[in-house]
Amino acid sequence: MNNYHLDKAAKEQEHGTIRQILGNNKYNPSYIDNKSDKQTERHGTPDPKDNKDSHIWAKFTYVGNETKFITKLFKNLPIKITFTTSNCIGRLLSQKPSHNSNSALDNSGIYRLTCPDCQMKYVGQTGCSFRTRFEEHCRDFKHNNAKSKFATHLLENQHSIGKISDIMGILHITKKGRTMDTIERYHIYKETKNGTQINDKNTEKPNRIYETIIQGEADRMPLRNRPNTGQT
Image (cartoon, rainbow, N blue to C red; front, side, top):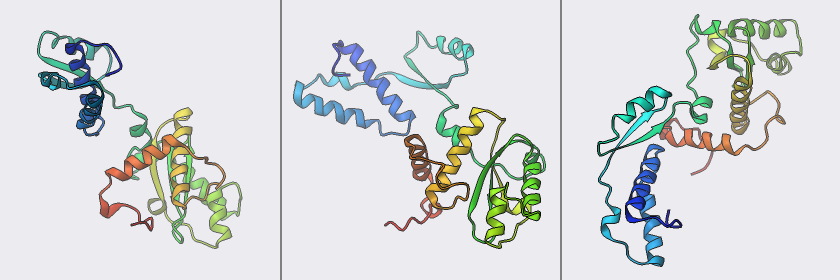
């Protein structure tokens, strides 16, 4: 902001915009003030009025032309508009798991199977229903078929297989496609990081985007629910 030749009014507007963006994304808005203070030390003392934000800000979830029409009504009012979206990658990948109701099990998407004996986990995707996919894993277990990595884990370790309501978790309901592939890789990555996945230890490489999302989830999680990593 300080690197551009802006007049006082433009700089004030830019400053307020940045503060609002920081606040919307759960950062401390005073961060920009601290940065401005450091700039002041090099460029001189600004007019105190430059730090005054006399506008009221309103946040709208952008859904298209309807949002544009509504926000135009505020054009002549001392209200500044900022937009947000519910379709961000963090929210998409870290959707809360669904309950295994009968209706939910009839959908397709990403699921997780937990070994009832050792709590190791298998993450998979299915274009058919979750119920059908679970039956396929059970059939592979019964007939000693190596097609299912989950069944292979159970057989090699002489572990038991549980009921669908006990060992299958629905992570994300979606249809076949790139979105499903990405969400599956994200959850495999999480289990790999936790040391609990039985998919394939060599499938997931370091991913900064996944790491950022996982860290964000951990920061929002209550301390009593956070996994014990052995660090203090």
